[in-house]
Amino acid sequence: MTSTTLPGRRMLSAEEIMRWPFRQDALLPDLHPSTGTGNSSAKLNEDKVRAIRSAAAAGAHLATLGHAFGISERATRHIVDGTSWRHVQ
Image 1 (cartoon, rainbow, N blue to C red):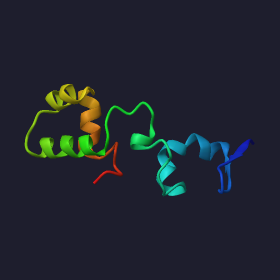
Image 2 (image 1 turned 90 degrees about the vertical axis):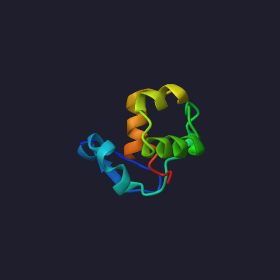
Image 3 (image 1 turned 135 degrees about the vertical axis):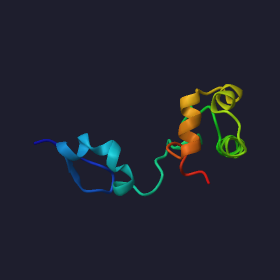
Image 4 (image 1 turned 30 degrees about the horizontal axis):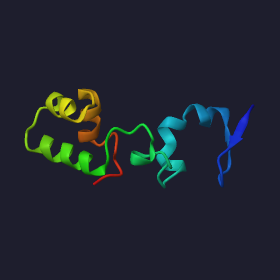
């Protein structure tokens, strides 16, 4: 069985690594360095995310918002639902 170590964390088994996307919050409660604007490929910043969420709450269509901000409707939906950019309130 292979395992790996996260910096400052315990050894993880292969089974845990395969489940990693589902357990990130449990193992690393602090933000990953490439979260949000830390990601060099990010098209948005925290202010734009807040604008998207408030416009959606006011009734704007997700496709229209996505087009206005240069992202897909699906990405817009994830932002509004809190699946992505969840560290932004």
